Image (cartoon, rainbow, N blue to C red; front, side):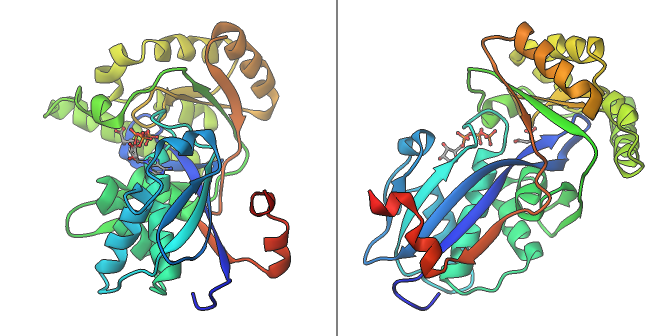
Length: 314
Ligand SMILES: Nc1ncnc2c1ncn2[C@@H]1O[C@H](COP(=O)(O)OP(=O)(O)OP(=O)(O)O)[C@@H](O)[C@H]1O
Ligand SMILES: N[C@@H](CCO)C(=O)O
């Protein structure tokens, strides 16, 4: 990034991880966004533009800046300070990939300010190393549905655009930190459960590729890797599965580490399912979400686009 007065926009989608048996491997990007409007400054400053962002540090201790600095440093670069206006529609600690979106935003920040020219593969490798798994990170980078394997040595991800299915999220009014939700998982699994869970993930993916959403929904509810162990942390999951079944939806699964539950339905059944879930869980936020097939996005704004930014006028 060259000119002093230039302003850039970074936009990163939310994500839902696992879809049941795709634990730590499958993710889907969703139409809720973390946005950063940034420009050069004489010091690091993070200006929250949304309530959720006001809880985080407003200087270079902010996680996004930390990720950016660490990413740039891995290429031997030091980033010039920026003023960052940050807004996010992604609820925190709800299993919709808020931390992954912050990580990907930090990598995009390093990329544009440090002029790193990173490929999506390189962005996803860094993001997966920070996250520890490629599901949320890969979905936020690539968009669509991603299937990945992340090890110390390499990160492999394949992404597919997804059309023709409706997504409804049931977002509880309480937080569940990924760390707490991972702490209840077993250190090992029986051979039988591992084979069954792996096969369920394979059939689910085959269902996605053949657009057999009824099969996808059935496999979403055939997880062996994490949902059985997390059940007591998210007692609403079994109840939501019942409503989905009764309303003719395809299926439901814990969104990432929870507590959000992700439901899939056809166009025809989505309205009825939305109403049924809202009536059954009046204390939760129940909303239809778009699927994001584009992934993270960075652009330099034109002077006209800058002029239209209301927060710069206030
Ligand atoms: N938009 C953000 N800006 C700055 N830091 C963030 C942001 N989102 C997440 N973080 C950092 O990541 C940490 C974990 O994020 P969060 O509270 O969302 O929990 P989580 O378990 O990762 O939730 P999720 O299921 O949404 O990933 C936060 O404590 C904060 O340090
Ligand atoms: N696959 C991770 C996703 C965390 O967002 C988990 O379920 O813990």
